[in-house]
Figure (cartoon, rainbow, N blue to C red):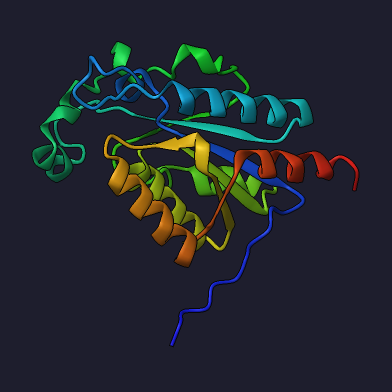
Length: 200
């Protein structure tokens, strides 16, 4: 028997979570990174619409202040050790032109929710749905999307605005996320939906 999956809709008060579009993930010179200019460009287009409508925007980065943080995660993935305070690698990619008014959530694990105050900030701004973008699809994006659902938010993922070092894993993750946890949508369709919010 086929698994039935229904379509989710962006709410009247969405929030955008840009997951780890930082130098360490967008620069292939970093062991964690990959060249993904198309993902950066898609995020720029989405940010422009969110900013135009003054819809809440949250950025995330990964940073480790001391050796006791996320010890097993760092043991499993030694490349994470470069994500130290004041490092070039933890800074949001300059192409996104993050504004001071757009909170930067510092995390130590995959999900933007785990061990952070993101849930409280979303509640405070009255968000009723989430748009999640960023890097990487199979890792921090996936974890954030699943946790977003577990906080009872409808979650939308614009396909062009997420990326991964492994294309096959990227596609498999999007397929699975779309089936069970979120809606994977075209960026152009999402932009149309967002623009309709101003007409309501």
